[in-house]
Length: 420
Image (tube, rainbow, N blue to C red; front, side, top):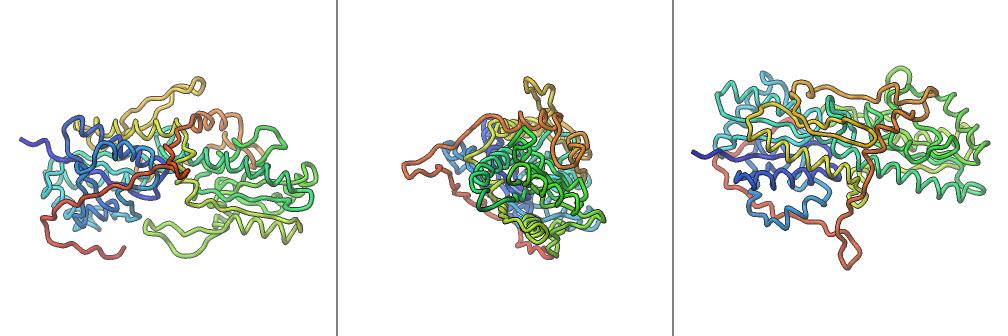
């Protein structure tokens, strides 16, 4: 009797190392003689029966996948509602799994993806279909519960800290007759983990960033402007790191752009320029701002070796858990020591991860609300350590891979997705 196939899918914003996890999944499953299919564009591909046969890829391509950024099979922002409200879609998923003898479903994503994997496991039980569902952690926001950190965060954190340090050297060089205030906007809707990572760029009181604006700390305009002014007068210039999720005292996003994404999240944009403009209008200082946006989550050339190791480990463990029948769990990274940095992988129930959000602890934020504590530094520093650069070609560019993504023949009627 066939042990069935494994379906892997990527969801949400991709990272510099999500393909490392994909490579680990495929490599580990191949070693166990389990065929891996991938859903094109996440759960959307699973619903459409738009599946990819990864066995058509040579091992050299899979190895190269481990150092290639982006999402090799396509990702999506598409949230399934609860089982009763979206029952037809869950039934369709089971039909697709049954048609292709899929017995293992690995969904690589964040909070919403963990929720989806958990619900798919529940509907499979209702249909008495033998399916093992595993949530595989990924997010640059580092906001998943239980796991010590999330694959993808370490590399984005390293990019943020390095970028801030390098930009600070530039600003310091020009401050006498040019820019006095530099603002770097970083990702983080509700959780200030990446904003905190910017704090690794310097250690002394006059080192950049001089001010970090966290989503966990309500924005006080008067206090902020006074601190900027004092810093410029003391240091000669001022560097600010600001989270995209910065809020006012009444809880409103400072840079709410209007509209919502497919997950129902408010669209954000432009808090960096807004803060820079505020400085110009109120203090008159020449200012400059930068919004790395996708760059901070796609910079594989600056990936953290620790992060790469995490990404591989959760992929490998996800397959091991699936084949062992450990349904509705997620491989979580458990830290046992800061110095030396030690960690291991353990299974945690998806119910403890789905729809939970881990924000930056108060103990990680300096008393004045504008910097990180030693406790935060002890947590963050191990996550950005080590380098794992991709190979470079004669043209001076990284050698990344594009998979063939050979489609699997469809067996079911065409399925149209509405309300995307």
